[in-house]
Length: 252
Length: 260
Image (cartoon, rainbow over all chains, first blue to last red; front, side):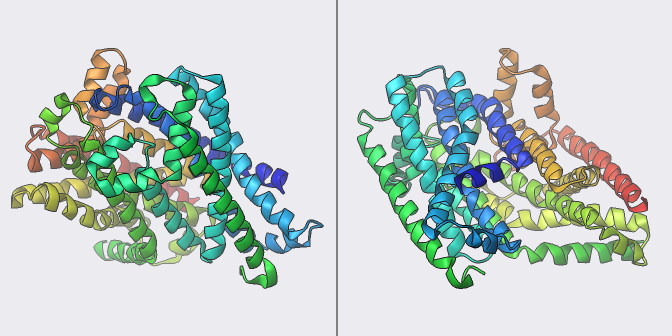
C-alpha cells in the first residue's frame, strides 16, 4: 500500500512541478521582499525565519493530497479493487496513512535541502530530532486528511473545507511569524497558534537548523510532544474511521 | 452583436454561480489573509515602512481585492480548457451566434465574473480603509473591469494553447506566482525598487513589477483611499494596454481553436 501511494503521487508530475515553482517563488520573491519590511527588533532575520516556515507549509499541503486520492479512487471504482487485494483492512488503512505521509516527506526532502542551503545552518543532532518530528507531522496530516475525506462524502466540499482549513491552520501558526508577535496582535490568535501542530513543526524545524536568530524556544520537548499527540490522534482516529467507512460500501 | 454576447455572458454567469460554495470558500480564505495575516504583519513592520504606508492592514486590503479579482477572472480559462478537452466547443459552434460574439462574450463574461466576485472584498476594503469619492469609485470600477477583462483574456489564451488540464494548471501557477509576487499586491513597490538599486533583485523584475497591472490597479485604489502613493494616470494606461493585448489575443486564439 505504501509503495502504491508513493508511486501514485509521483504520477502527478505537473502538480509536483507547480508546488516546486510555488516554493521557489515564495523564497525568491515573497521571502526576499517581505523581509525588507520587517522590523529587525521584532524578528532579527525574517528571511531565514520565513524560509523555515515555508518548508513546513509545503510539507503540510503535500500531505493533505492523500485525501484527494481517496475521492479519485471512489469515483473511478478503484476502491473495490483495493478491497479485493489479499491485504487485511488494518494493513490497507495503515498503509495509506504511512504512504500519504512518506510520499509528502520524499517530495519535500529536496525542498528542505534547498531551505537549508538558503538558510545556511545545521545542527546535526537537533536536525535529526526535528526531521523525526516532521516525519510524524506529515503522517499526522495525512491521517487528518484521510479522516476528513472519509467523513465528508463530496469531493467539492472536501476541496473547499481543506482550502479554508489550510488558510486558517497556516495563518494561525508560527509558520510565517513568531508567537510573541501573534499574541501581541490578537490573544485569541496567539492562543490558537500556541497549540497548532503547524507551529510545533515550524518551530522544531527552525530549532533543528541551529540558527540562533530564528530559534524561538529552549526546550524542544513540548513541541515534540505536541507533534506526537497530533500524529497519534489522527493516525489512530483516521485508521478507525477509514476502516469503518470502507465496509459495506458506506463510502459511496 | 450585443444580443449574442449577452447570451454568452448569461451562460457563463450561470456556470459561475454553480460554484457558489467554492466561491464562499475562496472569499473566506481571502478574508483569513486580511484579518489574520495582515493584522499580525501590522505588528512587525519596520518604522521606515510604517511611515510610508501607515498600516499593513490598510495597505494589503486593496491588494487583496485585486488578488480576488484575478483569481475569479482567471476561472473562465479553466472552463474553456475543459470545453476544449471535452470538445464541447462543437456544441458552442452549433449555437446561432457568430464566432466573434462567442469569443468576445467569453472575455467579457470572465471580466464581469471577476468584478462580481471582487465586490465583497472591495466593500470590506472601503469599510476598513475608507470610502472614495464618486468619481474615484467610478474610476476604480472602470479600471478593475478593464483589468478583469485582461486577466480573463490571459486565462483564455493559456487555456486554448494548453492541451491538457495539468499543463493548464502548471502554466496558471507560473502566471499566478509571477504576477502576484512580483507586484505591489503584498508589499510596497518602493521595496522592490530598493532591492533593484542595491543589486539584490534583477532590473528586469523591477521593471516588470512597475508595469504589472496588478501593481497598477492596487496602487490606484491605495492612492484614492490612503493618499499614497500619488495617483498616476499612467496606471490606467498600463492596465488598458494589458487588456487590449490579452483580450484580442484570447479572442483570436479562441476563434482559431473553434475553427479547427
